[in-house]
Length: 433
Image (cartoon, rainbow, N blue to C red):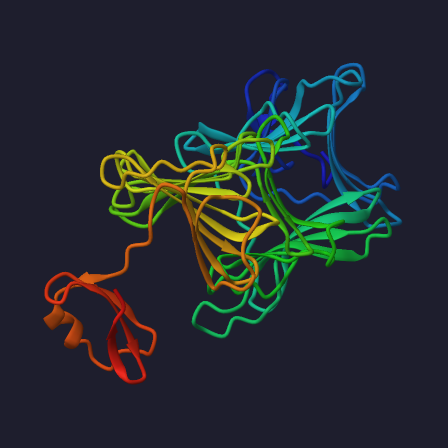
């Protein structure tokens, strides 16, 4: 044999048994070959001057490429190619697997025909599919302080949204590296930051980078045409609307609690404009209706009305069983007080029958008695009745003379000697009759 000629060890013919390759002196090398396999037991170094740049080119019996590693001679790009399946196939075409002592641990990375890559799975359902079995799945984006860590969502190469841990320097006390969701315009330029979370405080800002509360929402205008906050149910009905002109609209039942002894609810319905219902420790109700004939205001305590209105301008006051009165205003009277009815205060008064009551006309006078549209402008106090009289204060003579600094014009009725009506004049008490 000539120098450089290789042969199988001992010059035997090649068969299915792996045998060392030897030189002409029968000195063996780390390379073994057979008709079925090739084995190298030491580092393998491959060099090539092939213009195609192939380092490894594996083909099947038909000459079709199945696996190759090559370098583009012009761009120096190195590629790893797997065999192709029919176009559109989702069949696995290649994988990078991990082993331990010959035992397969996992498919660390799998590739299928449509370009999808699976990490931890050989059946990826997206362009990148991460999967971990029987333990936590974590995607770590790590980097130095003072630099953005981001996930970018793009259209045709132009950014649309970005998830950021921003480049605010970390200065201790949990400051810095705050989280943001950023929106970008059609040109890929930053449009706004819809959500911003400060790491140190946990404050969430909506449309602001300086949230001063656990949740701060900043509107985009100052009129009713723009909405800062909208809360809807699954049917799209607004439960809470806050406009940028500082108006708020409730269309829901709001439960208010303040500990074990304070619980109440605010409710808006078609019948009641506002209903406040007391709870534990606060046994009072308030109902404010709309202007369609329903109760305007109703306060209930212990099941008894203590304040109720039957009309827009009338308030009925009650304090338990059999106790009620009404207060109302009108164009004729500034204030009308109609008396109590029931077992404790017995005087039935109603607007419809014109019975007695206390009326305060808009001229500042006080009228006691019949409810009508006439009153005496020259009288500060007027009593009207055809069945009842005027009853002044009644007392004994000792009580009368014990009145301290009586006012001129003061009138009392003495019940003992000398019985009768007395009036206090500038000269002293005078017996009238």
